[in-house]
Amino acid sequence: MSMIEIRNVTKRYGAATVVDDVSMSVEKGSITAIVGTSGSGKSTLMRMINRLVPITEGQIFVNGHDVMTVPVTDLRRKIGYAIQGHGLFPHRTVAQNIATVPQLLGWETAAIDNRVEELLGLFNLDHATFAGKYPHELSGGQQQRVGVARALAAEPELLLMDEPFGALDPVIRGKAQDDLLAIQKQFGTTVLLVTHDMDEAFHLGNQIAVMSAGKLLQCSTPEKILTEPADPFVQQLTGTSDRALKLMSLLPLSGSMAPAKAGLSHVLPQSLSLRDALAEMIWQGAEEAAVQDAEKVPVGSISMTRLLELGRKA
Ligand code: ADP
Ligand code: MG
Image (tube, rainbow, N blue to C red):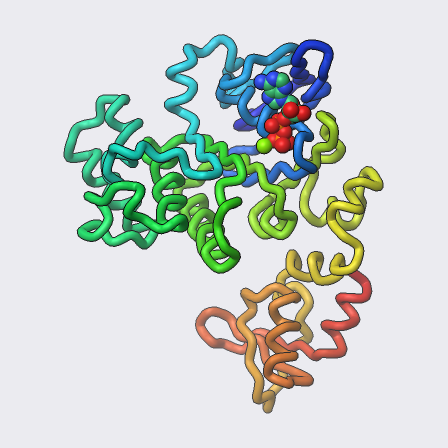
């Protein structure tokens, strides 16, 4: 059973159908990014999962349970929810904000304190400096990290994020995305994330769902979205000019290497994507480079000619 099963879900406000017969599933431990133009129904779809918005037609299952049959407070405590502009409680400290749901769940004080400390550490917020601060004393980026830490506090099996990084500048945004990826890996949390940033969707998503005017146009892997767009709108949204580079960013260097060779002066780690390998070779002015694994053992080689060939095919 998937973590989320959305079956023929429709939402109407009066005569307006804002979510139109959407079906999709989200596997446990994966990240799904929902993209689409403003007003296409992304937030509404997400809010029907934690019942902030009532479903007009259809069914949603979370971890096998129809959300309409689960008491709403139980449902929401199991689902973390992080929104743009963080939504922190202004009169509660950082530690108190993060502790909100564990407190509601009746965790013991020591367990709550441990969890607060662990999360602050994970988000690179020094406990001594930040635990006692109030939201207005933090930068936008710090507030956003506290918002996500709070959503994760009770170890939810599912995290819903509605444009969580929308207000952040590009550098902090990149950092916040990497934090999320690391934490998602560590806890195996299932994440459903709304974003209007296609690069963010491709960077984070194992699966991308494209919405337009209430309809789900396509829900598949980033590779498929790029190579087999189900609709002209999907193709337009992913852009045509940098499609080769986007696809290269999804492919690992380790999958395209030639055999190892002696005597190469430039070295690349095999963990790089083809796109990063290309960028690195341009930067180093390298025609050919040795590829090494994490232990610095040579495992292959790659040439500029080969990389450009791979990009053309992509
Ligand atoms: P998105 O998150 O993709 O930008 P939303 O899900 O917020 O889109 O909204 C989808 C559509 O539903 C919009 O046209 C919006 O105006 C409409 N809508 C959202 N909430 C309400 C509401 N409470 N009453 C009436 N219309 C609404
Ligand atoms: Mg929205």
